[in-house]
Image 1 (cartoon, rainbow, N blue to C red):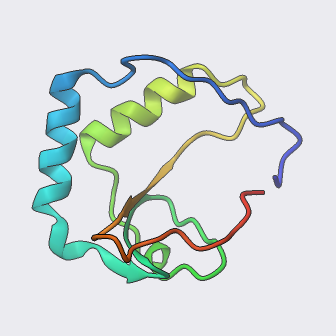
Image 2 (image 1 turned 90 degrees about the vertical axis):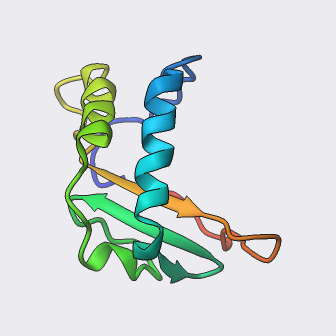
Length: 107
């Protein structure tokens, strides 16, 4: 990471309730024509520009829709003051059996 804060991995059951889940699915389905092909899958970026090797989608990310913004805000409430805020969302869509996430590292 470009900061000194160690990553936190936590699983919260039912963090997204059924109603929110359905709203997010409907939102993403309504934007299906805006996904971009990228390295074995389709992607759609929201929020602040986020670059990673091989990306094409983060060149012009869309603004965060209200539902995604509220999820980011809830996640940020758990952060410490020195943790960089979550301000972008990358959605990966896998279109069939030939879709894949290429070998990579998250660092």
